[in-house]
Amino acid sequence: MRLPFLPHLPYRNLLAGLAILLAGCAGDPLQHADGLASGAAFQREEIDTGRFVLTTYVKARPAPTVLRVYIEGDGRAWLSRTQVSPDPTPHEAMGLRLAASDAHADATAALLYLARPCQFTPMARNPACRPAYWSDLRYAPEVIDAMDNALSQYVARLKPARLELVGYSGGGAVAVLLAARRQDVSSIRTIAGNLDHVAVNRWHQVSQMPGSLNPIDVAHQVAPIPQRHFSGADDRVVPTAIARDFVTQAGSCAALQVVPGMAHEGDWPAIWPALLRTPLPCTSPPAGGKVQ
Image 1 (spheres, rainbow, N blue to C red):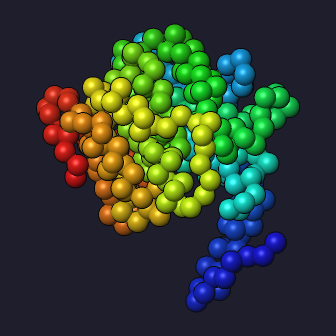
Image 2 (cartoon, rainbow, N blue to C red):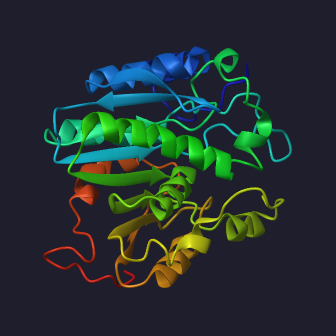
């Protein structure tokens, strides 16, 4: 294993840094996720949606006023620009970190984390999994069907008064695509959301994904839903222009909030409780709906 260069660190800090790096290299992503979840009182579950068995983490409460759902990003989809990963399970699980941050800040909401198909769940229990489902078909109709099925199971079980969707990166795409087909979504929030994969892939000069649904194509369908899209000013993976174009098409109930100094994989969880308190457009009191 080749370790990255750590310049100009005191000897004690260098040893600590090496220990962290070694632990990260040897760590099990599922074990890491379980640790995050248990620290925020989530329970891990597996939900059979027919085609896929999805891993979820839930912090339930009886008859919640709100069920806030966190949808994971694309995970470790690629090993390099040209090589697809054999397993898309995210090593850091940003979506779960955001959910855990919310759990520590909000004691009133029921919270649900949805991993994407083929993440965390052993492949032996997911015979439908193949690399196309975390590359070209990552937002295919059957993927959105599976996520919708899992979400419906939890709504039926928890019976929330309101349903809020939060998606990180590619999970933002899934959140919008889910909201476009459901009648019970009260709000959408995305963080560094891939809201137009055609434009993003064109910007990166990589191949397109014709088998995947594109969120910007349903912007008009989700237009009545209050929504706020957060973008890092230093995001080089999904540039702010992507969210800006989506908000323009979605109209007055959608807002863009640009976070200075934040990169795509920056420390969103540290500021997430404050961002979550930002009022949504088309709610009372009104927060506008203008691009910020």
